[in-house]
Amino acid sequence: MSGTIEKLTAYRQLEDRGFIYQSTHEQELQDKLASEPQTFYIGFDPTADSLHVGSLIPIVAMMHLQRAGHRPIAVLGGGTAMVGDPSGKTEMRQMLTREDIDLNGVGIRRQLERFLKLDSEQGFLINNADWLEKLSYIDFLRDVGCHFSVNRMLTAESYRQRLETGLSFIEFNYMLLQAYDFYILNHDYQCSIQMGGQDQWGNIVAGVDLIRRMGGKEAYGITFPLLTTTSGEKFGKTAAGAVWLDEQRTSIYDFYQFWRNCEDGETGRLLRLFTFLPLEEISELEQLKDQAINRVKEILAFEVTSLVHGQQKAAEAYRTAMRQFGSADPDNQVKTSSAITSINPSKSSVSLPQSAVTKQELEMGITLVELFVKTELCSSRGQARRLLQQGGGYCNDNRVTEDRKITQSNFNDGQIMLRAGKKRYHRIVLQ
Image (cartoon, rainbow, N blue to C red; front, top):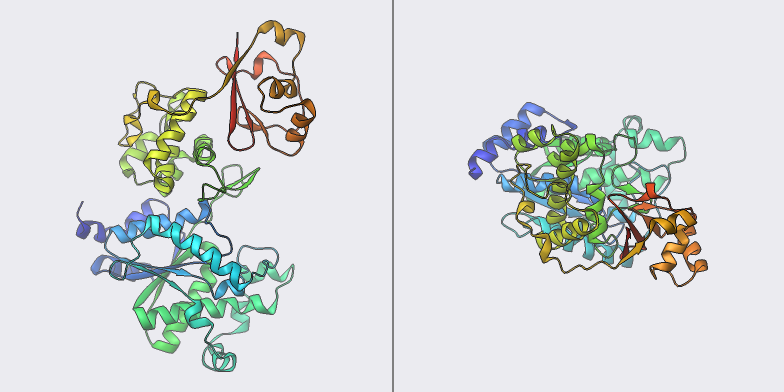
């Protein structure tokens, strides 16, 4: 599909894939995206040295638009991170030092450059500290603050929620700063569209209004849905915490398994949002049932891991999972355009240690702690108990926090997979 054709369907592409929660001037925005290349931006506050899987929604949306010929601006919030965004938070964010913010920004810049072309022609990254730190507070209040109604600001969802638990004055300024970012980008770089999570709606609309009041121009906003799982949990959160894009924070195998273990009913939605597989193919994949749905999850996990860490590392994670649990579709009967079908599991360099347990041993009684010692994942029963108590012990990829007797029902296809920490595995085979 040519860039011209894709550009004509850019808004519809985002809409059909589930990216659009809300937008301003919807028809005008569709017409602008269809008529000529537009410059748009999304902000990323460097509150950590890595982004997490929730950040993939805006990143993939930017990739779709850039591929359609539009120009992204990734704004690193070096200035706004000094204040802290109250959106989506029940309490004030921890205040970061300038040194921490700068260091975090290096990590985030490196990650964004994996996904987007951030040169001056096709897109770029800019730090809002470049203009925010130069502001005179009195001049800012007179020139910008005069356009904001406190009554209207308090109607924003992010502020209304925080009023119940306490909203600091420094956080109250955040909306003005983000709106001013949009104004600067519109004035200096002809940026007419801001995008962000649905909790950013109030901030985005404030920027649209400020551009109209101070610059006499029209600007537009799009928000993305904040995802939760079908069980109501925040997407991207696990018992171990957030799932990060940095492999030093979340191992590539754990990243792969996060997607592989999604709930059955989520596969279609996640494939639309986080992969570039054709929509027609996704519609067919999400209709599959029984064992075939596990193949869909393998495809999802492989595609997202490829996007974030590269196809070679995704293939290795897939091979490792197949050596542990087998393939859900060893004969490639599920039709897909994913490169997962070309991977030969026999070429894996991963060799998992293996031990055997007899049925007689089970009948005599053997516990999980004893298995951790038997497999040398732990050197003693005491160490194994501490491992479980501290949340570092896993059985069949499920965290176990206390000792228990092992029975034949714990075996899946004649095997149990033990894990100590993030990277140490051992397979137990029933004989």
